[in-house]
Amino acid sequence: MIVPEIVIAVIVAAVAGLLGVACGPPADPKHPSPPPVTGAVKPGPATRPSPAPPIPHGAPPAVAVTLPSIGCPSPTCAFHAGAGAYFTCLAGGAGACFHFGAPCAPPDACMYDPTDRRYKQCARPSEGMCTQWGAVCAPASKCMFDPADGLHRQCDEIAGGGCKRFGALCAP
Image 1 (spheres, one colour):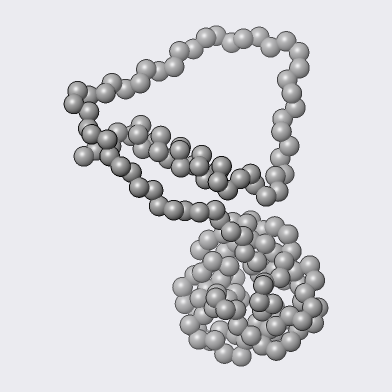
Image 2: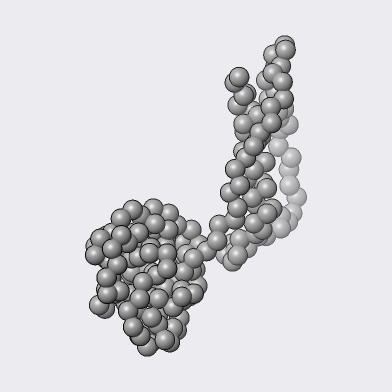
């Protein structure tokens, strides 16, 4: 059975609307609302909406649609190679963060030290950087920064706070 394109468009719009309501407004909007319109506004020419497509005789029976549970994206704390510090990753994928937020420190305090390219415990984090390093460590997720390409990858072989063999891309 073929589902008309308009039904698919309505479902997609409904899911997008539900995600917007469920997840709430963006955490830190940077765009103020536009100023109110002042002065006289002249109405433009009237337009008519296009008519809805005709429904064929013997319309298909109603079908239950099950949508996957997507959930709200949760920000992570990711290493930014250019700044040499950790920041909240608000949007990312394919091993990279595309939108960074405020400075942060990973919850397990295991941070990447760009000077010697190893992960170490941070005894004193400050503004996304570590001011006092401790012993070597590895993130519990095994998702580690690969300095060779600047992406985060699953580490298949951890050794001495570094990764001997990187695997697939992972979410920072």
